[in-house]
Length: 369
Image (cartoon, rainbow, N blue to C red; front, side, top):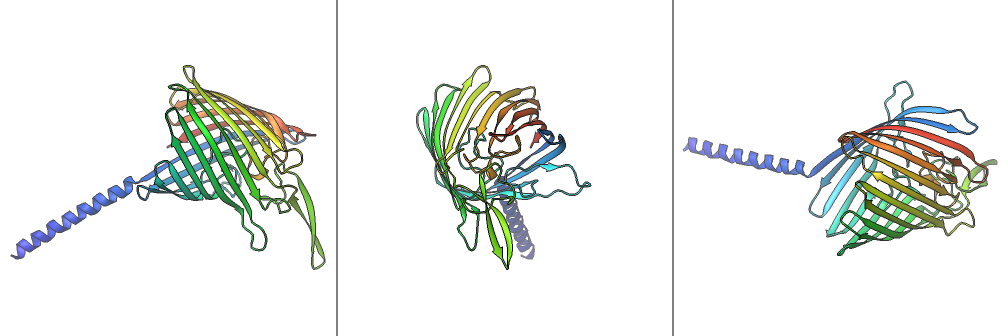
């Protein structure tokens, strides 16, 4: 009897252990780990300044977890020192350890098919044909709603969100409210047209201090406010206008033996009295997605001082978020699967009225896993 009880107990423990192992395997199967590493040589040549050469790198590690059939949560760790638009770190400072931060901490609830609500610090929850309005590495914080109505040959896409850029305990907060509607029309087996419009409306910007860097408006118009505390005068740079940027965009994809894509963006800030417009055109041929594949592209960007909020605009090509124009060609080659090389040369002007010539040359090696 005792042997029978011991045997039954062993069988029960083994079965429980097997169940736990299966449960653990199932839990691990619900996680997705991925990332990329990029090493860059960068040369900046701005009129009136010494040419600067830097070696830089960027690392990103993403962990996504399936909480249930309706909920996904995710984190992304990046090499970042606090810059909202760039995860690059420069090789310098006596081999010191570089900072890492979370640039994404979010959860997405999908209660019904093709309808999702995301909370936290997230990837940009809107369609971006290119980077005229926002840097590709900017990740907003707040809540977003995304809906896609699929039809025969065409999809309707609706995106909206509310985001907090700067919390203030004693004054109005700086917030961003976004809305977007787009249609993606399939015109052939490998061809499509995407057309849409967006609104990006900020509150709590005009008259408030500069975001991220209090000494750098990233191209935007400013004015100086003087305050006195205990007889000591302090001067502060503040924004000279609010920002409600309206965008129209279009993208078309073709198959010419390889992918060919054309895109365009146009933006106007309805709150600014002048210097309120920007536009961009981009073309891409090929796709460097595997060994011995390649792609090339070209972009022209024109962005006036107050067309968009400069702190979140792309600033690594011409050294300023807005008040820039220029040409950006590039070529990329797939060395092996998930490993490519890219060469880009940006030629433009920083300051549209009395600006300076700016050239930025980049060579990137990127590995994905």
